[in-house]
Amino acid sequence: MHKKTVDTLIINGDIFTGDRSQPHSRPGAIAISDGVVVGVGREQEILSAYDATRKIDAQGALVHPGFIETHIHSTGMAYHGAPFSPQSGNASKVNYSSMKAETDPEITAAYTAAAACSMLQRGFTLYFEAGTVFETDVFAETMTRCGVRAMVTAPWAWDYLSSNDPHARHETLMRRAPADARRVIDQCKHELARNKDDNALVRGYVGLQGGSESTDELIRESVKLAAESNAIFWAHQAFTPDDVADERGSFGDAGTVRMHRLGALGPDTTLAHMNMLDEQDVELILAMKPGLSWVPQHAMAYRITPPQKCWFPHLYRKGASVSLSVDTIMSHPIGIAGLMSLYLSALVGDRLNDSDPFYMQTIDAARNVGLGDRLGSLAVGKRADVVIREARDITHYSWRDDMGILLSLSSSMIPVDTVLIDGKVVMEKGRLTTMDQDEILAEAMRQRDLLANRLSA
Image (tube, rainbow, N blue to C red; front, side, top):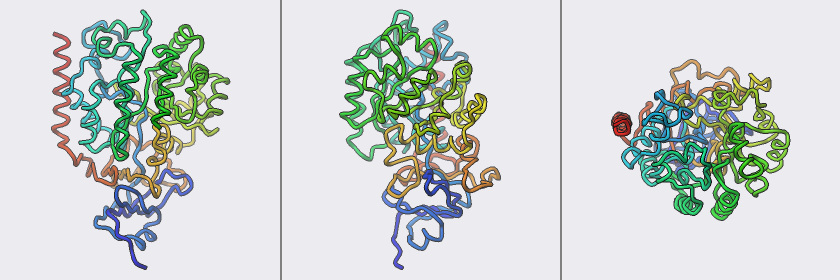
């Protein structure tokens, strides 16, 4: 039989595809051409059908689709272990708000490149910037130079702040991001223009701070813009009891019920947090099918769940699209959400299956960022975003082929060797191939210290 020639063959892999209908091949192989998966399955079958100009031997290591982080504030990624927290307020000049509000193009470029490296080293090929980057063009340019995917929206997208809102008391933040619906919509349109290039690594979406910081009018207009642009609508919702009380006090209802009333609860919507749910909310979610971006470690750290009931395992088993996210890495490292979802679900007596977090970070995450048709699994026709883990690690050898048990934990624990995005090798032997990784880290640390020194002066 005449073989087809492709750009790349990944061979000798322990492949977990993310496709539940064909979940696992060992030994397996992947054929890639023009940045797209054209063949995946048993190695012998793929090698009999394809030849390639480049072969990558996975040496028996785990191979899987790139993980997708569906909610992270990248301007806080440089502050892990900082002497302040998101809850510490503005008592000192150097605080969570000031460090995010006082960025400039140089700072954002440095942080963004460092974040891209950190993501790749943990097997993430796309991250969803949740609306706190001011210099969005610099962000997009830097991610593109690194060769890493991202989603970006208007910074601090709100149009209502009560006098008690701590954000309203931060002068620089309010100057740079006034609570104004027209600013938000215009900025979202700017970000959505990136999607005109169908192959762009960085894409725009319509995102709001949400909750009590968005009026009914802004939510309706944002949903309309997202629908017209074939993009997702995303918002923070129902994080804490206080958030829900504030939203209900300002607008009459809150969370799922309010989103439904405003026509914002549907398959093209993804809502982050959603810790405060009751049976009515659950019925609406199952009927309307929005995506949910769950931050399990925050639900525990903020002492929300328990005592509040954790509905995510139930929703997931009933078909809801639940993805995982870390939100901020100031106290929780990238990749911890998979493990914490297992812990929290066990704590509340409704334990997830060991393999569920793997699917939440791949196929469900792709759906929740509006890219389910092109990312999230190693399937023919999808973009070739592929992670090859370190082979010389006994913990990567799966005991059972049908569970993918270790993949639910591997996002931060099993080292990454090689990463391909759009079929291009962007990390090899754990090192970024597109830019100098040592220089990136040094510059990010330098910019972080310069900013802290400037703010404290």
